[in-house]
Amino acid sequence: MTLAAFLAYCAAITLAAATPGPAMFAVITNGVSRGFVRAFMAGIGVAAGDAVLVTLALLGLVALAQTFEWVFHLLKYAGAAYLVFLGVRIWRAAASQSAESRTPQALSRSFFLGASIALGNPKAILFHASIMPLILNLNTLTFSDGLLVVAVVISVNILTMSLYAALAGRASNWFKTPRRMRLMNRFAGSAMIGTGALIAAR
Image (cartoon, rainbow, N blue to C red; front, top):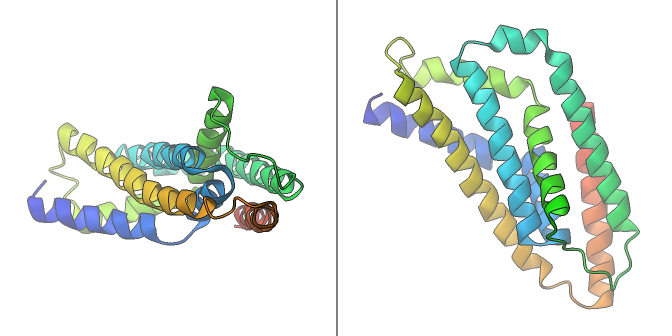
């Protein structure tokens, strides 16, 4: 892989990751309502899910993924249902309740949320499969090049989602009084419910 192709692919993936979408909204609402750590774990889940999709695209398994599209749809609806569930829970949370929990179970749920959102979008694999031939020479792509492509996708997703998580986590510090926390619960709950509905409707 040439340096020019590598930089062009990095730019394309960064633009795609930074574009507003369900993953970004899920990370932001997690950050505002539950703090940076929970939002960061959701971002790690997004990166892991996207890495699986780009690996399938590299292996030429787009047709296989389309054959088993029901699996991706199942993950999509599971992630959407969990987002709605979280939204209702946050909406009904007491204003004095601490929203952030860092237990292994809570962090794993945030990771699952991010991964299910990423994997629940089967069209993403078509994006990877269509953009690769435009930038990369797949005929000369080596195994190490493939690992580099996956590493780029993971790194860009983690960096982008971490930025969103940090900004949202910082904003959550403003919601410390009971009145502000109540407003935050209403906003974050509504945003999560809306994001879940958007994911399910796609």
